Image: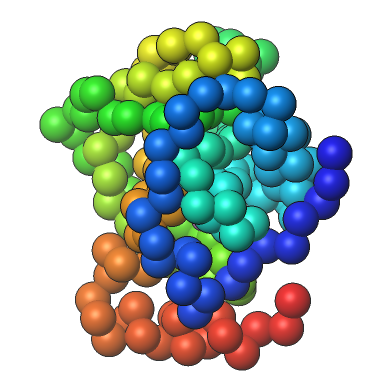
Length: 178
Ligand code: NI
């Protein structure tokens, strides 16, 4: 495994649409491990392959299932399944209910903003064994998986803001020392 450098805005790779993975082979398995190790090293809750310069539809996330969007722990929710490794994830259902979460991104260092997204989503993806899985996410996991999937389409959380606010945050992010 390896810790990879995380690209920051305005790197053009972050704005590219990532390509589908044809087969979950040893290279993709290594990429998943490297993403996981880099996410842990950077103290992130999710990381998408384009953020380490690999324009493929691959992501990892590690958010406790019992975590609300405000980062509070909920009682009575199983927190065991936290780490997800996803290849070619697709959104197959979203709830009508929306929820607003304070988001940040390793590729937009030091900047945070409220983003409103569907509260629940159902995702179909291949896991690290290449098996098709379907999982419904809510709370902070739902916000995180949608944020990471945006990276696969070259989209950053600041794109949900007004153009003026977006420009301010992107400019500030470029001045942050990493
Ligand atoms: Ni991000």
